[in-house]
Length: 306
Image: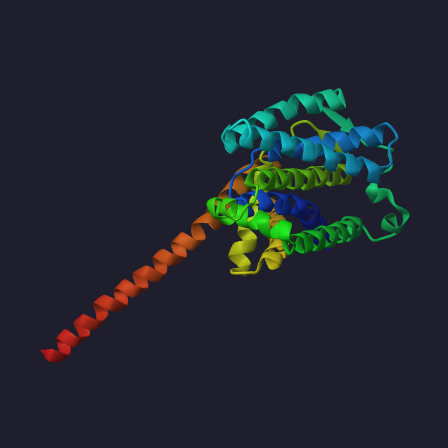
């Protein structure tokens, strides 16, 4: 039971990463490699701030601000500097590594003996691992509700239109560069908050904790889409979180099967590759069945005529 509760709690906390990546990967339709820099950036900022006596909630908000700044830099490199989005993200991601070392002063910082968001009295009174479930659920509800409301506004619809058809959006008078910058800022802000929450949950921040993060975020998105199929925009936000939880259960089964923690990135890549190939395999299987049926009918008619 503890393992199941832990997987759900971790899935909710990591779900924020999936939601942030969903804004750029699915709505704006481009891969943002800044993710692997802003996730540990959020962790570094929050943990360092808490270690210096800052309130955990304020430290988490500082992480959100730091992530937004990193996202804005990527956006400006892309929209104003005309650097390809993939390369712009890589440049900021690389810069974040040195910045994180500057912030922490070392490769990792511990929160041993420090107060975090998970140290609140009403959370410590809950059964083991239920603190991450409760806090994760609360944050996910707030974030999903705010994003759902935002996407229904004129600004939100302009944001969606920019990702759907940029040329059409420009013809309607939408400043697509501003929409892209805004999307990157909000996305990386949420991802930095996810890093801050994971760091506070684990009790430490490490400069290398962003390696392979984009695969985890994409896995949450793809698994949610494969499992739940065609959904509305608001439902897809919830599906991403559910995909994150399912992904945690997959990792739990992998560890139970005897694999080590060093194999998790490999397993994550394999799971993501399989999920990405499922639609193709499904269509190919259905096509083969149609072909078989098509060839079977003439054979039957030929036998009857004979």
